[in-house]
Amino acid sequence: MPGRAANLIEIPDSFWQRDQVLDALRNRDVGRLFHLVRQYAGISQTRLAIACNMTQPKVSGIMHGAKVTTLEVFERIADGLNMPNPARQALGLAPLPEATPTSRPDGGIPPRDTLPDLAAGSLSGLLGSDLADEEDGDAVRRRTFVGLTGASLFGALLADSTHTGPADAIESLTTILATYSPAPDADVEHLPDLTTLAAAVARTKQGYQACRYSDVMSELPPLLTHLQTACAVLDGDARLQAFTLSAEAYQVAGSILLKIGDPGLAWLAADRSMQAARASQDPITLGSSARIITHAMMNGGHHQAAAQTASTFAATLDRDIPQHDPESVSVYGSLLLRGASAAAKRDDRHTAHELLTEAEDAGQRLGDDLNLRWTAFGPTNARLHRVNIAVTLGDAGTALDLARTVDLEKITVTERKASFLIDTARAFLQCGKHEKAYLALRAAEQMAHEEIAGRPSTHRLINDLITTAPPSIQRHAEAFGRQLGVPR
Image (cartoon, rainbow, N blue to C red; front, top):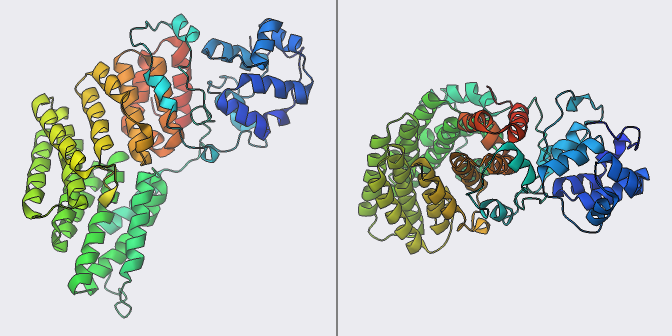
């Protein structure tokens, strides 16, 4: 029972705010936590054992290196130590229903954005388990957390409830998207500096790939305004470069709008990207912008047209580039991957795997995992798409087998890594492995909060998990969804 230790031990509130304690919680290092409790609260092993419903030798063993791995034991320890909700969440547990984390005047655990990124090796334990296990509630509570005990995964998930998402900037972005020319009073006495504009576009691309969508959405309106002016007042090669930069910036806008569920504006941004790409007279830029058009088609359910469009633009790019370089190969391969995803959405297995194979060939030609033209294309990205397509086709077992072969160290783009974790969660959910689906989603949220909190598609996935999970996992999934503001 929560609070059973109230007459046995007294731990001051300040204890749970110590950096050492936070680090132990996030690493799920119970031995270290017990040592800290003894050091700062003077609690003996016997009293710890009684409070946490353990034996004294068990407590001693934990303090000397034995690992706690089961959810049930973590909950007994949290209850026995009367952990406040922020500490429970730092340990990876759901908050108690009657408690309110915001009631602590000092704010409790520091914000989640102070935590490190997901360690590359952490997911291997999640993917290395036997999928034949049954998953009733008692079994889930007995089983381990599959080795995912690093600070990188079980950091505090304390996103501010007043967190503002990218939707806050939509109104100003809408105005810019609807403006097809610079303002009449645009300053033409001082020509735009393309170097500065190129750096600004690069920052939005980097922000998008880092899943900082809110920041990028606030940067896009003034940037697009400056780019419109540059396209209007520059001439010659400078004007062509301005159109190339505009095409890239509109790609970013369209991509974020699709993620946050605004298909109408996303279509407008995608169209503007294509217009700018055509004006740039650069076939690689045109092929790159075709990716966002294809994505918008997929989002609207036009999967056959999307697959055909991607294939057509890939073939056109291949024809128009007499001598391919790494940039053109990256865009070509990315188009094929987008087409394969679209084909999978309409259950066209043959086309999906055919395009995947062509993309993998392009990845081998490229030879490495690069991020040219912001494609993140390479052999690893092609493999990530194989996982995604297997899940889309309902082949969850195949998806997990493929996921086990992915080297996370080679996924350098946060957005790609988070998407991979989401696909892994989908595969686990298809297999009925609710605990693992929950853990994969938590890992994705830790590294890319807005990729989870701001996307309707991930909201649906979390609700599917809540609906189908056994009670022991359902409670944690519900708390996770409430914390992220997921509508039910």
